[in-house]
Image (cartoon, rainbow, N blue to C red; front, side, top):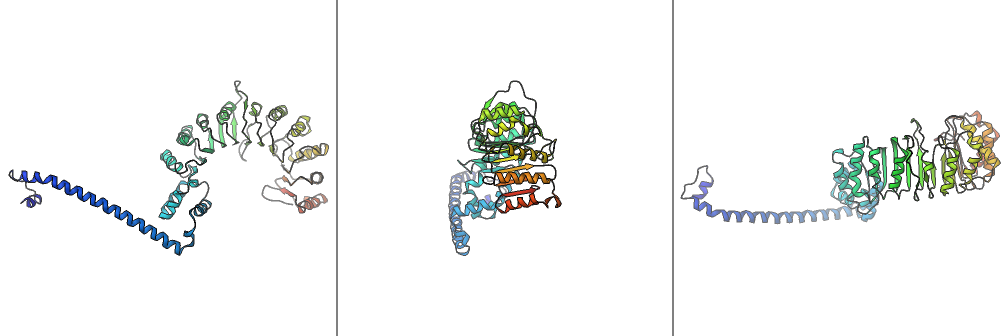
Length: 429
């Protein structure tokens, strides 16, 4: 009778209700028993799936020699095969290939030690950062941000990364906003910082950034536009900075990036790239005297009168360990004249920069016979130490290469000196 009532839509009679109520504990016990049985079967299924995976792996190792590689070698191959930095979408697809690849990716912490926001869903940046960098415990982290178009977005992304600040050693920013400087300064383990472009930026703010990053080794900026110096700027000695480049990209207006140098002392500096537009010879000289840096690379933009100045000659005399000198293309006068002046300087001061190995000069016109002859004389005097000479010019006619000086340059080239006369990509010699 009870079963017939359960299978119908009629209400049970009052006399039957106590019977039904008495069956509830038994039904609950049966339900719990069934749930336990299901859990046991799930464990059995899980165990069977693991056995199947193990057997499949063993079969793969017999069929495919690559599957027999030790995990560390497989991880190394994986790292070398993926683009760097690995895109979010690339690693997502990699994990979907198969169980073995997913396991290998998750077991390779260095794969997750570089992160970029390129192709990443912006709505869940913080969540992706936590899952991604959480797989690289204890490793140095590199961060490449491609989209910081607004100050609010920049601060949001940097604050999402702040939990990993003790590990973050490299940071690339396409733009720098005033509001993000305080957050960046909290990344006190940062060693390498690149800023592609900045809006109107006070040197005081850049100095504040350097003060907050005592472990910084390299600072590189392009197209950073500075606002006028504020009177309260304080001098800064940074003892770890080795690489300071204030550069620019072709097609952008070149702003003065060197007004900050009079406020800096950099005793560890080894590489310096600056424009000489608005820093005086005296300020440059004082910077070198004050810092006594072990400078090995100098990229600088001289003016025509600079190379005839005792102050500039004294500046070059303060950096005897310099091995690489890159003379940037001038703005207002001929680069060919600049190159001639430089070679004349060495003719009068042959002991200047005794350790020089590589000389590069950017000019804005075709070299003439006189410049070729000066280059031959310079190479003859520096033959024992100089390894390369590059004259970067927009064009070279074949007629200008038909002379004895060019023939002598080819001899130097054949003897092992890297002589380049032409564009950045093409050597007309």
